[in-house]
Image 1: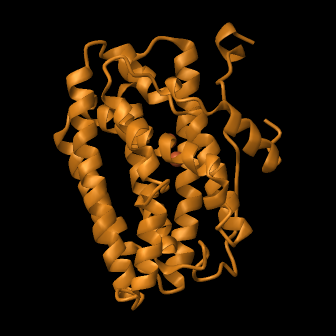
Image 2: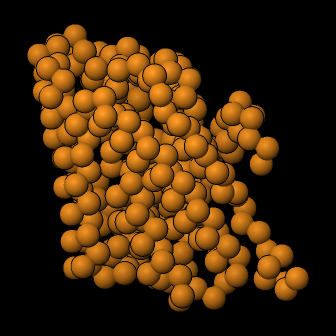
Length: 275
Ligand SMILES: [Fe+2]
Ligand SMILES: [Fe+2]
C-alpha cells in the first residue's frame, strides 16, 4: 500500500437508502408552512449540491496536498449521497401532489448559467458561502431538539439529522481549498457570499408562497403565523443564526470557529452510525 493510499479523510461517506413511504403530508410539526419550508430546502439540494461538487472538481487538480485530496473525495461522496436521498424524497413529494419540480428546474438553470459565466474562483466562493449556510443551519437543527423533535415522521427526522451531521463534518473542506488556492481571496469570498445568500433568500420566499398557494394554504393565517414565529420570532430557528451567519464576513473567519463536535457525536450515537 502506498503512503497516499494509507491517508484517510477525517469523515466517512455513509451509504443511505431511506426508501420513503407513508410520510404524512405535514410531516413537520403537523403544519403546512413549516413542512413546505423544509420541502422547499430539500428541492434545492440536488442541483445545489451538484453545483458544490462541480466547483470542487474544477479546482482539485491544482491541489497537491494528499490530505486535502482525500477530504475533497469524501466531501464529494457525502454530497452525492445527499443529492440522491433528497431527490428520492423530492420525487416522493411530487408523486404526492407537492410541486417541487418547478423551482428545482429554475434553480438548475440558474446554477448552470453560473457555471458558464463565473470563474472557478467565483464558483468556489459561492460554494464556500452556501456551505457555511448549510453548516450553520445543520448545527442549529442538531442543537434545537425542540424543533427537530417536531418532525413527526421518524424517517424524515433521520434523513435531516444524517444530513446535518455530515454538513457539520465536512464544513471546512471547501473553505480550506479556497484558502489554499486564493490566499488573498477575501473580496471575492465576501461578495459572492452576499450574492448567493440574496438569491437564496428570494428563491425561498418565492417557493414558500408557491407551495402554500398550490396546497391551498395561502390564507392559512395561523400556519403562517406559527411558521414565521418558529423561524424568525424570539429564539426563532433562523433569528438565532444572524450572528453566526454574519461571522463569515470577518476577515479571519474559519468554519471550525463554530463548534459542532458535541452535536456530531450526539447524533452519530443517536442514529447508530458506527463511524
Ligand atoms: Fe449536503
Ligand atoms: Fe455540504
